[in-house]
Length: 64
Image (cartoon, rainbow, N blue to C red; front, side, top):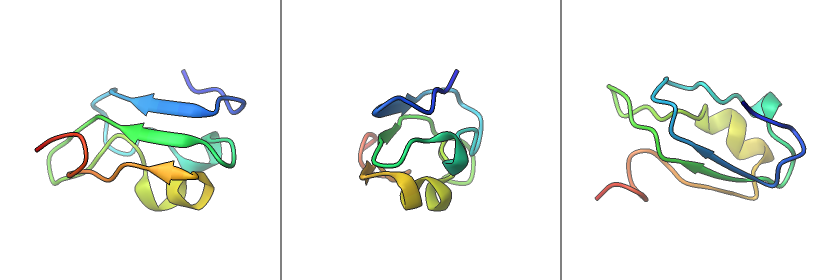
């Protein structure tokens, strides 16, 4: 469940690009902990990056 009034979003859903940018509050901090085939995270990165103050890329920050 995603709430637009949240200041923090951590996705571990294991569904490619499940979290869309329109669902996020401007300035939110996004941690994409999901990883799917083809190096795709749970968050639609380009859409979310327009609204997020900070966002983790997939792959990269959480998995090494």
